[in-house]
Image (cartoon, rainbow over all chains, first blue to last red; front, side, top):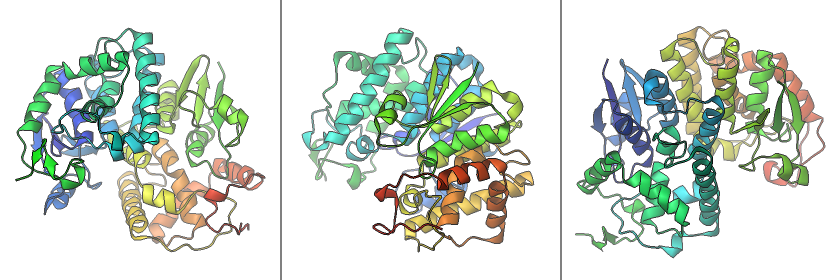
Length: 228
Length: 220
């Protein structure tokens, strides 16, 4: 039975990136439907697929599964060979804790550094608030501990899994907003960004044309240039 | 091997209620370690993310209410914390995750406070939208499963995730349909609910930021 993943714009939709990159990295085939967000009719179009009215949505056998984290749980069950969660029970509980901490947390980082792959990477000090720096410190601790304990290059070893997928948008935020990260953090970001799946998402985001002004911190500059 | 669940004050800690009520309702034995917020014990006990709840199983530490529920579901399959059917399980996880990361308007406007005297608080538009979404979701789940709980006759992980919402609806006298009220009654009839409630109202700690009537503190 074929899977369909309904997502928002690739440049901005951080939550959509999570299941998308997990599925691509694991080689799980799916059809993709992109609904550009915050346009007239977007909301209605999303609600046609899921009662929660939010992307991403995985459609499996006609049934919608919404919320990035529950989509990842569903995929882990359906494709056990993809090893989206670690096979060791202790490591798996650790992976779920850090994935869930991301799912509901780090609001300052998400608010001040909205995902935007078009942004020319450079420090934007106005977005480096004390609360954002606290989020950065906590995330660096999580990543550092995971990679030290399980050997890297990804959070739980050699396989890019659900925990990595949950933090993929954070990699983009750290990169584009030029947060002052440690060398070890940068090494993790490089490992994620070196993946073919990352590159594929990035290229598609670059080709998009929908502009969301409220997610453009350099406005009236977009992609580093005055908006036309 | 014995389990320990580290929780915050029962009167205010909505997130602590979730794994606690799931474990008590499922008959999973554990030791409870209650650490009041803003105390040195809290800082010592609250684990790597500095948050409660925290489940300790030997040398394993699991934090975040939803991750704890997943851990318990794996460790105690007979408790049926998730539905056995794969589509129902995906549905249960979707609404559990929706709760985990969402409904911030409702949570901010109606903080969990078991001991507060029941008095109506009028809803902001975003909080009212959250209430409507939750009521629709509960109704859909119970219509599909036959109730009385969201996914049938077992109080499971999805119900546990929404247990604090039941408390919010009650404390602030939120207008709900008969159908929604029937679900709330099913949850509040659980002995585990009564046990938590009794302990919550007996607590001495008061936090101004969770008392919406501050400097008044209304108690039943």
